[in-house]
Amino acid sequence: MSIPPSGVTLTTLLGDPALRLGRAAVDDADLGLAVTAAAVSELTEPGPWLEGGELLLTVGFLLPADVEGLTGYCRHLREHGVAALGIGLGADLPHRRTPDALVTAARRAGLPLLAVPDGVPFVAVTRAVFAHRDAAERSRLQWALRTQRALTAAAVVPGGPAAVLTAHAGATGRPAVVVDLLGRVLAAAPPDGAEALAAELAGTVATVRRQGLLGAAVETAGGRRREVHPLGSHRIRALLLVDGPARGRHSNQVTGDLVSLLSLDLERRAGLDAAARRERARLLATLERGVVDDAVAGHGLAAADLAAVLPDALVRVVRDAPGAPAGRVELAAPASAPLDTVLATLAAGRPAGVGIVVRPGALAVSLRQARSALPVARMSGRPVHAADVASARMLLALLDHERLGGFADAVLGPFDADPRGAELLRAVAAFVEHNGHWEATATALGVHRHTVRNRITAAEQVSGRRLSAAQDRHELWLALQARDLGRVGTDGVSPGGSGADRL
Image 1: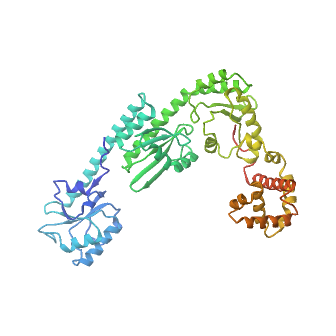
Image 2 (image 1 turned 45 degrees about the vertical axis):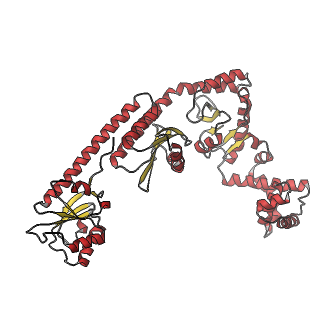
Image 3 (image 1 turned 90 degrees about the vertical axis):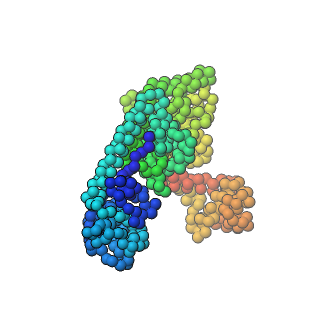
């Protein structure tokens, strides 16, 4: 089911036997030029009265006779968007045959030139242009209606989004892909190249996702048109990617129908999955009460269906009191799930605590760790793993910013007052981080090891501390950590965040 032509072209008019138009100066590359209308003018500068895309008809009463003058006339027409020039020929007209000078001028200006033969009035040409345009419009409307029916038929039979996309590709010749909120392919037609298209449009998908259901994006380059549309009713459930050459506005209209049908299908599936999601929440509550037998937990996990984004995820909303706003979201997912990617994509800027990987029966342990990490995550405004909490940084984070700053300033103050302080502090930080290894420190700083030795010696002189002494080295490290945490508190997201916390 090919898409009809978008309008009238020079090929259309030259192929009309009633007009008998001649190719006075028309290259093969010009045959596909679109003609929006036909206009008649004997003015030498008709541009201000034109809109562009016209076939301009003239008998040449006022045209100059020399090549240079005619070249200027043809260039004027090109500058104002004229698609082609038609010269009327006849025994009672200025020209019985197309002037050679006009042919030369048209070729110089790159303006297609048609010859209107004797006996063909200009009004016949103008009527033909509008008749062909109306016929093309009717053909495209009929094509759009047939395509809408084909998409609707695919949507009401088993097959899901893949069947609808297949019907769309067959009607338009344009590949289409549906991806989830993480950019993973859910359905595609044709399947070849789906992953590559999703990867190429990943940045655009992220932008549209942030804009919500009212967002959309169209990229046109190299003769191709790529579109990204959100799918869903009350929230984005997936995104549609469409590729292929631009085929005119009716093809875009069909894309709108495709978006609607896919959104309805996704919402229908979400409604059918509501009961399964409630079962997952009840299972998570059971596992949270304590360590249970793995067989019991495994049976429940095996019965869980695929979640919208995380396969086999158990999710529930925890409220502080009945009827109160959601306090946090708790979820349990398989160890293979891309949890960090999910948090970065769907909960960017929100605090999140992440427990360690455990066997199914010990899920309560991981949940307890995640809850313990959440206060630190609120302070830093980013996800915090249980392993991160089990560190000196966590202890420092429990102090208020004034005490942290006072300790850091007391230890690092000598560096702040020294002209080379920043450079020396970087050397100290790298030296401590690499456990006093000179070669590793030099590699990390991108300098020679002798330069590292000189900087460490200078740092010891400035601070009065010896980096060979464990206590001095540890205090410097704590001060650097405290100052770093102080910056997070002043420059990062405020503690508590907004919206539901993510565990």
